[in-house]
Length: 121
Image (cartoon, rainbow, N blue to C red; front, side, top):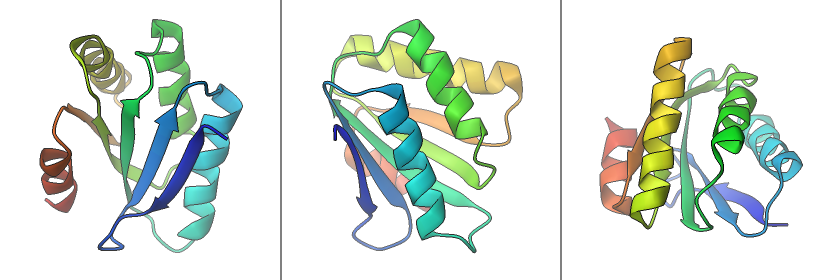
């Protein structure tokens, strides 16, 4: 499976790791498993580690955001990427969240520590 998840080192949020090749069903399943692991939390934070995959297509960005939206527990999503093209797709994801006025925040980072600091805020 190319989409896995684990708890953060401090146990405060989930870390979803995406590596190529991966599929939309794997993405959805990982999001669901995170919610199942934290059934009583109404406000989940998640760090998506996208450093090990190619930049997603624009279509995938929209579908990935829709999958996040389906789980009402998500409140903050930090996306960590490794190159300029992936960063641009992250900015597109941020715009989609804002345009749709979704009930969660998404922010893109190139540094892991900056993403962690934002999730702790």
